Amino acid sequence: MHASGHVMSGLLAGVGFAQLAGLDSGPGVLAAVTVAAGSTGITSPDIDLWLKGIVRHRGITHWLPTVILFGATTTILAANYAPELTWVAMAHWTGLFVHLFGDFLFGMAVVGADGPGIPSKGPNSGYVGLGLFRSGGGAEWIFTWLVLFPVLVAAFKAWSGLDWVPTLLLLGAGVFYCSAWSQKGRH
Image 1 (cartoon, rainbow, N blue to C red):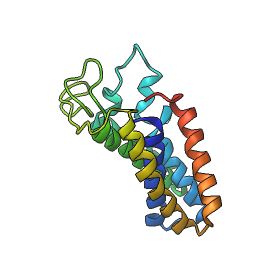
Image 2: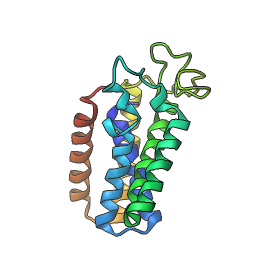
Image 3: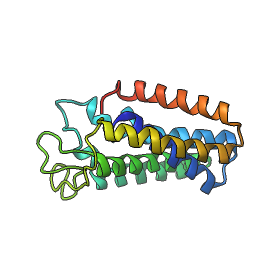
């Protein structure tokens, strides 16, 4: 999945997280941004894009046991040392799962992988996924901007109570900025 798809799916999941956690608008926006941060860029499983030559893309950082171990560790540390911020660790963990789900749906096979999606048998083997669209291709672009973005806008508007214009401007600018910053337009 391309950066903008990861950002939008992360923000959408973040709005859902904020609603389920019963967070007010301030912490709720922080939760949505935190889930999005867990789903894209250097704070997501795509940290491997910054570690080229050390680890393979969609390898150990995209393996479910790694994500579970990392998320559980940060959540336990937060619960023990900053209990009031445990929800932030849980929001980030949610973003990590959102990222894996996006790559499961849309991730095509990468160099050295034995299939599309994410590794299931080990950090670099047993890839499973649907590979629905070519990552960054036209079909993914259409899905991201004509399906995910309108759903995100409607969900955020319903939760935040903002009018349509500020909602569109805020989310459009946020998605554009995060997509450009997170991976410089690369998957």
